[in-house]
Length: 185
Image 1 (cartoon, rainbow, N blue to C red):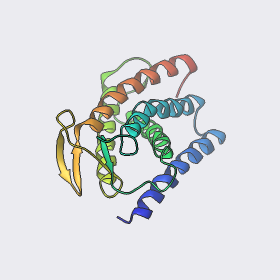
Image 2: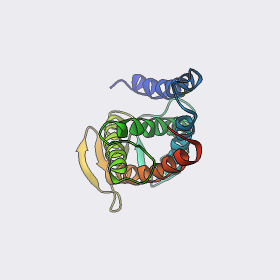
Image 3: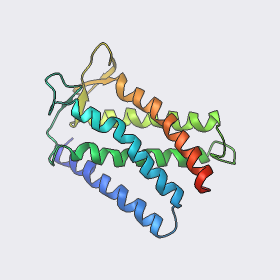
Image 4: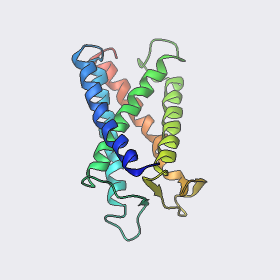
């Protein structure tokens, strides 16, 4: 994949996510609770995006990942923009819960809702890592971050998938709390 195209799509999509979310909210097509959940999803994303950034090649002699091509903007913008992607991934997960699970949604803890969010998180993590391996980054294989399989120029490792196994649990707790505190999604 052409690297300029890869990073252009990465950056422009992040900007498009924020513009779309705000436009939908201003038009009344996105509830304030869902807007809050987008922000919560972005904040949850900071829990791994920024630590992983600071464990990367810019700051470490033994980095957790390798940047295959240098990010074209100020490096700190990469984790910030990826937090926007995280918020959007979480919101799509909410939408996916509505289809296979019976109503009422997010009114109390339910295993089926959590399972959908976790499956979506794992699936999206695999896609993100596959796309990232096409020219953006790859994680370094280690004893605590073993390779699950190899593709393109490197390994798809356990760590990013484990993040997206745990993160939906945290997000689901926030969804239940915000839905109870501020009203219907």
